[in-house]
Length: 511
Image (cartoon, rainbow, N blue to C red; front, side):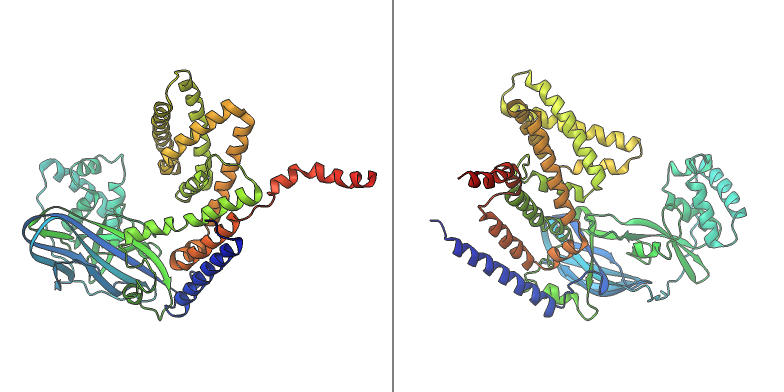
């Protein structure tokens, strides 16, 4: 049974009303700002522990971060059903310990913390220097270590300049001593050992490199070097982490030691996800989490899933662009929503690189498809062969990009391979049935639509609104319903029928 047009208008109006009310509720009640960057910045960090329990008592200990220069710990939560939880300190290091009498199978434990970005809060952490440890080297490594340390010592004036000098030699591929040392030890281990040989207290720590929207990341090894009671952190390349670089790292531990300890389980690992958010200074993140259901918020999900939704929630905007261009303008595209998926790939790589990669892969794919046509294959086998060819092209493109130094070209793997294969197949059939002109028209229409969808989806304001105000999804749905009810002329049809409109006045005069 078809609904009347007036009913469709009422449905669209209801969706807009509900979406607008929810947006107002989020802004006025939950104090979510309407504009990004107008309030205080926060980092929401999540550690996910995964392990296999053996059906016996299980104990899991995880090192935890704390307030440090540039970052203030505001709140922390855990998700561990069936486990007891205990927070305690081991020296300067905070630890979370989960325990249960019996567990079997795969277990997931979550720890989530929110840090306030506060560059002016230069809290001095009173961390005692570690005891010097002198490790016995093998005979060959001893000679290499002594030679490298002697040269670095002459080029330094204090503990920190000595750490920089040692790191400079370790990163020199032509230095034979460093190549020998790095053949058996990591750069951070060699740096700590050599500093201890020079009576400089140092230890290896782990920190998290902060990048918005990253999922399943690992901690980065860092070296903490002491000069008296003061200390400085160096990365694996020997660069001091201070100033702007300090804002990119958060120390996950303050004392050397294991990040994760598991008793009663196997195959354990911990991964990290992070999201940067902007909220009013007066708001508290726990409000978002505790009221997640009433607030229609996805902030209660693990951060890895939140990062995924930050991209998925942009798809309705791309769908709106496709509907607008096809219904009102009259664009022809190769596939209905293929441009949205291509735009989604563009979001993960630069637009120019994405366009070049797409044109090269589709162009070569069309040539290979014509060669396959001469084999008289069935449709399923032909499409499967095209998929294999597309994967091979992407692999070849990635390898060439890597060896030529074009790192952005390595992101070509983000293209949806199945969609590319079907696009090549559809264009080949279209070429055979209607000629090259129609292929160019639909191909150009697809690229223009993808670029316009990307331009809208890539706006920082749109990213912020679509993730933080889910009611806007209903508004977009209402607009799509309204556009879907349009039955008038498309813009391209008006241009096509323009000669007939020009003849209309002269005809009336003859009458």
